[in-house]
Amino acid sequence: MTGNLVATRSVHRDAVRLWASRNLAVTVFLGAYFLTIVVGNLIFASPIGRESLKASRLSDRFLAFPQTFTLGYWMLLLCPFILTPLIVSATRRLSARWVRRAVEILPEFSRFEYAVLCVALFAFVIGQFWSADVPALFASGADDLASVQARFTIRERIGYITLVPLQACLPYLTVYSLIRAIESHEQFWIAFTIANTLLLSLLLIMTNMRWPVLLFSLSMVLTAFVYARRLPYLKVAAGTVLVFAAFLLVSTFFFRLAPAQGSSQPGRADIVQTSQHVLESVTAARRYAPDLLISALNRMAIAYPYYYQVFTEEGTVCGGVIAQARRNPACRPSEMINARIYGLRTFGADEFENQGTSPLAVHISGYALGGWPVALLALGAGSIMLGLFAALPLDHGASSGSLTILGASVGYHLSQIPGEGVVFYEHGLIWPLLLILGYLLWRWMVSATKRRIAS
Image (cartoon, rainbow, N blue to C red; front, side, top):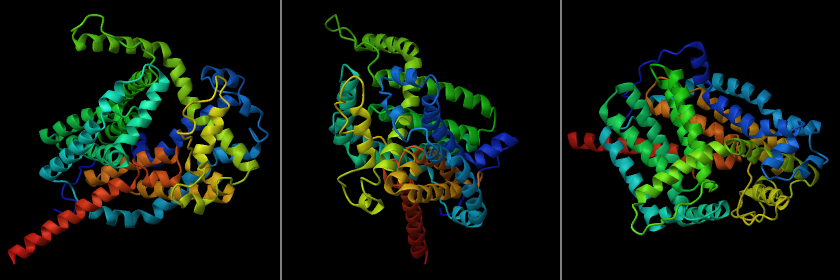
């Protein structure tokens, strides 16, 4: 079963929806970059900047850096809004024919093979969670510092080999099933979409990280936006509200803002305590919503002034591209900047400053490795990648459609982390592509075996 045997019927889209769908990857890149990095820096430069930092318990000392709010500061911050659309447009025009030819050979999953693949991946991840005692670690910790420590411990125990299927392969497969469910209305694909979504969301939450589960949820919302045949805007509005609510609830638990529940009566049913804790979490989420939103705006944005100050005045102190390509380099920009940020916190040194990282968008990370030349090279390479996703046909099968949504995920990661992370990290682009390639080779081997038997 090679080739695009399950072609998606064309979806009627109005002009706005069609434009947004065709430019999904670049729109997500620029939108996420604007919301998580640019908005915060605009606030820092405004009269309310110091109050915003104070509300997030962050030092405002970077406002006195010599390089903060200079011309070069704003040029590096805003250059993606000028260069990326131009590069994406040129790449789409030049590559459209070749991308369409590549799409022609993409295989569609059979029901049996899809079910076997999902069950195998979920079984592996759940087995790793069980052996690492993830549920107990996830529930541990009476405060935010203990919660962060639990996150580091969970990641260390389950390892990279578990995070790859969890954050890269299973989200891709779930998006695939949703597109098939929208197209066919078949119970098989509907059932797998529901089951995959619920189980994958639970597993992602149990890693004690907010952004993986929120990014997965947004991917599902974007899939509905691009491929829903009825009421797409209503579905997206409802999905966005749910994602926002999930963000508040997950953040409330992550920072342990709701009081922990202890049993006051021996033998009392856990379900009672859990229900009470959920209600208190909802109340805490409403109470702390403004603080959580301000924290989300500042969390990524505050790193940019440090990047520009350090790597403008001190140069490539962590080495260039070649130095960073080596295994376990002595200095990484994201780790160095994280240590400097938290070393300046007004309430004391952060216990985890040597474990955490503060990565930034692909071109800012490039600036740290070689100034403007590497920054522009990194932005150009990322924009070409987005242009290739923009060249994908929207209605040419669920495999092609899933790649369109994957492009949105790539766009988000380009706005947040270095280029190598977009490709090779546990949520990297390479893993769904290897999954597709592996399935393509499998179908070719099956077909070749059948031909030999028949002859």
